[in-house]
Image (cartoon, rainbow, N blue to C red; front, side):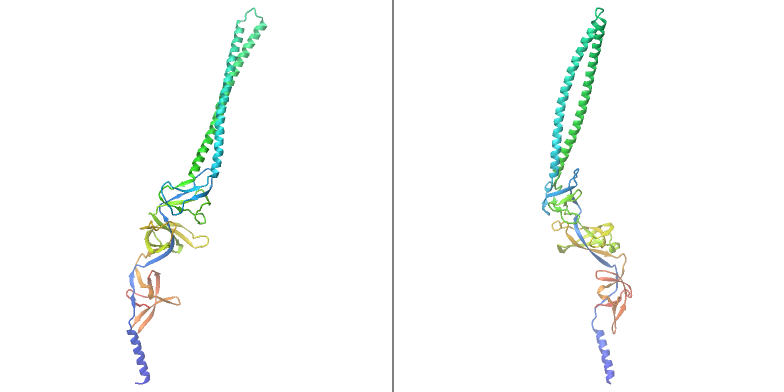
Length: 390
């Protein structure tokens, strides 16, 4: 055997030897592809009682004077916050002073009216008596009285009668005027009494009490910062809340590009950032109808979603905790599936290596959706085809 033949034989022997080496393979299977979307979320209570500043007339801004420690357990009726009442107290002092002055005016006016009416009644009695005298004198005058005297008696009787009518009119006018003054003062009294009652009620309502047992969770300002003592809040702002820890849920933001793949009822896995070793499970219960920018700094378009938590841990979970959420996505119909590790890429082209009796060969393929550990195959492979793993 010459040297060329010997080298050819050795090469063939090496190839055959390589082909005999054990190779790890996998097969193309048919099944439903499972995918995952990873998003971030925040724990909230599904049953949350928010406590806001009370609605008070002519008050739009409130200052927080005292807050119970966040996370503190409270019972129903416990004081959890106090708002500044200095402005209301000043207004109450003014209204109380106005009410007291009005009540004094009512009492004084009644005495003055009664005294004036009493005097007019005396004047009326005297006028009637004078009229009776003048009328009697006129009627008793006979032919012995001179005509000029008789006319004088008649004029005196007419004047006395007119004086009676005038005093009676004065009494009627004074009575109506007194009633009107009393009605006006009574209206002022009712107004100031209503202001005093409303302000007293408002001052009392500036002490916020827990409507039920639970823990204290501070509200946030428009910048997302926790409310703190000394801070100003506005009507409608939540100063704090009392959540029900036995009914927790997770709010999350999902990128717009995943909108078509996220559906109601999909299963999720939840890992709290504070305790990532423990996995909670749940389902998507709500999908937002409006897309929005995630925030001013990140122009990513997202939509909101809400998921339930199957078995919440009230000892561990607190509203405001952040979490990583994995949404399991299941394709609607089965497809050809292959292990992701078996697929390689070269110049953007996906390929696999198929075993041959001489070793292996590259097989170009067209891939579809990618799952957790498997990928769908659109072209290039058939069901049951054997593929080498690296």
